[in-house]
Length: 296
Image (tube, one colour):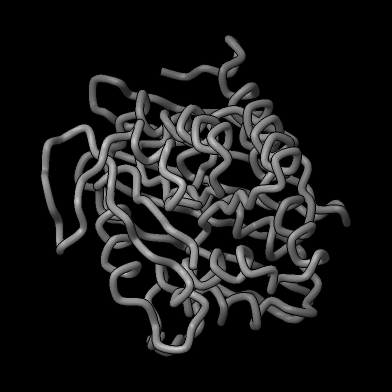
C-alpha cells in the first residue's frame, strides 16, 4: 500500500479525494490509501478525509506520495518540497511555469528514484481517443486548433502557452515534434481579452496553427480544422461516454507506475512529450514577449 496526501482543494483536489476514497475495484488504485489533505484553509474534514499540516505530510513515514492540485504558480515549489522529503509526486499540468524548472524537477525525481507523474487528462478523454484514431496514418497538409475559454488569473495560472498546455500536448501527441515558426499575442487589458496565435511546422514541414483565446463570457470550446491528403476533418468524431472518470483513469496510471507496471519505453516517451511541450511553451512565451511582437 502507498499512503497518499492531497495538497490543494480546488475542483481537481476534491476529485482526487473522492477517487482515492472510492477506488475502482480490482484496479491499481486499490494500492493507494488516503491519509489526509493539506489546505491553506482550515477545513477540518472532507468526506471523512482529515486535514493535516504540510509539515506532518512531509515528515510522515506513512505517506509515500503527494497529489498536488494547487494553483499552477505553486506547482514547482510544492513538487520540489515533496521530492526533497522522499515522496512520489502526482501533479496537475503544467508541472512548472518554466522549462528549466521542469527539467530540474525531473532530474531530481530520477536522482531520488521517485515517480514524478504529470496529469494530462486531456489525452484520456473519449473525444481525444476517437480523434487520434481518426488522424492515425493520414498525411497532414495543414491544420488549426482553436480554443476559447473564460478569463484566467495569469499570475496564478501562468502565460497562456503554459496554462493552455493541454492543447499543445494534443498537437504534439497527434503530429509529433513541432518547430515554432512564429507566435504573437493580442491583449486588450481593459476588456480582459487575450488571443495567442502560434504557428508551427511539423517534421515534414507542414503548417499547424494553435489559437488560445480567452475573454469574459467566452464559452469553453475547441474547434479543429485538420486537412489531410485524403480530405479535411472539421468536426470531432462521435465518442462514447467513458465508464471510468478521467481523474480515476489518471490515478490508475500513477498507481501502475508506483507498482512498476509501466514499461521503460512508455515512461521515456511520456517524459519526452511532457518536457518537449514545456520547452515549446517557453519558446512561445519568448516570441510573444519580444517588444515588436506585442499588440495592444
